[in-house]
Length: 105
Image (cartoon, rainbow, N blue to C red; front, side):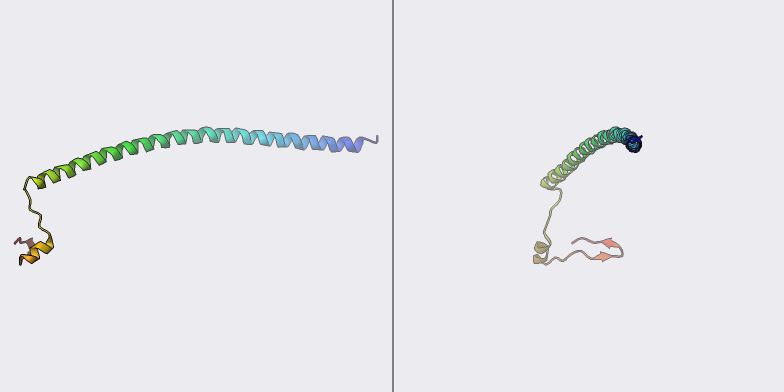
């Protein structure tokens, strides 16, 4: 038969094509599983970002409250804040430690 060689080539090519198709289908299944896993990871990360933003907001509010309390306390006259340059102009230097104790002027 004169077409025997052509048929063998065709059979070989079809066999290779089917093997490649099996390989591609296996890749597709793996990629779909990766997509599902990555979507779950994305969802978890988005939830984590949301929690961290809420935590950041809560911390910001608490720190702002603390700073507000400190400012209120300072305005109430509970502490007199004198810059170092003003203290030096009045002839008062910085306090010197004595036996591990800080002595004020």
